[in-house]
Image 1 (spheres, rainbow over the protein chains, first blue to last red):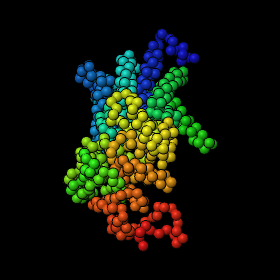
Image 2: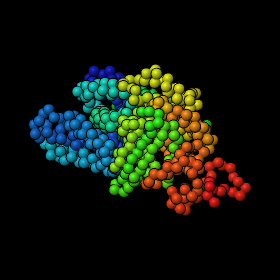
Image 3: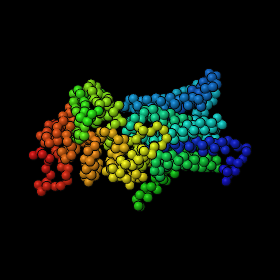
Image 4: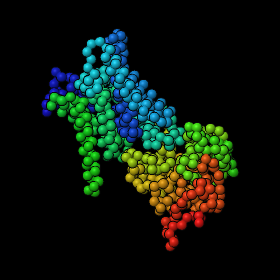
Length: 281
Length: 256
């Protein structure tokens, strides 16, 4: 009840903003998370999220050291995420081997660049909040990003539902039916990149993969179609974020890790229950 | 295209992967309503030949015409059935949605048109899966999955049906059933099937292509142990596929 009272408290508007943005962002998380799990590109999402630190670092540096005010950390994050997505996409489409090496390299190089920029940015900067996120720091500008991303993701996933389904299920066959699978794959990676930027705000770079994939993984146990999986994953994500926020508020815990631990527990519980159900059936 | 024109023509085709030759000087003509079985050892180039015909790979030298066109252009008129075993068993997709993928080329945006659903349902019915359309692709048996993938290829309404290792991981009864169905389909479609399973080749196919860097075509009647031994390069053991043990134990097909 503490949490509900706090939500109604006009003195702490950031809590309402955090919850509201989290619930709205869950739509993009659920849909993109479903694609990421179904297409098995979790590790690509991980690499993109770590590259985001490079963009954040560059943004901070340009803003604070060079006085370029329009290029802030958020712009940097978006640019870095999209660049990482396109590079990884082209590598996996063109080079038929060593894709994992390239992804691993990008993963750490992106992060290293970010740390170097942060080290050379004047003033004391705490990379912790980027690494581990804080949904309570979400601003109204982020809320706009959430809304735009939701519209983009829902629109694309609805219009091209069957194309994306085919690309995730059987890319080669989709190509043989005349689908430009390379374009759909790159589009999917770019949407993943934008979603990752948002996830970084909520749970931080290190835990992006968990909040992107755990709701979808839970949903995958019950869904009979990708569409159902998306809806269920969205609901799971909403439940995880709001309950994580509530628990973290009432027990004075950091929000990101609380959300992740809750999601992880539910995921493990579902898997254990499924196993149990199968052995007793 | 007239009825007598070959469905597939290959002239002087070479293909190498990373410098090592996979196929050399391949010449091939496949007549309409032929049924061709492609056999050969693993790594002999069977799958490569298939991918070249589908236009997924480009030949280093030589020419391929499929239904009178370049492979990439002819693609939409070919029904392709990949191996069913490589699918993610956790993927949430219904049998009907898989079969509808055969109609993807007719889809612009949004949901499929009613006629696409009708075509998919007709293909499912033809494969004896009419009552399975709402089940998950992962739930049905290996043999049913194989038939669902054939239904997907039929929904695309091509003129040529290409199957890659359709008998891998399915039981003997399903295999028998599969060949009965292919036999029926062969009345209206040209069929091409890849297998490493030579045993049943003689039962149903009109001709057989042995692929081991080179491609040699034989009418099935010529398929003898001697031929197979030459093609695989000597010391091989064959396994019977009729699953009946003779009194003296398993003997080899035609080899003695």
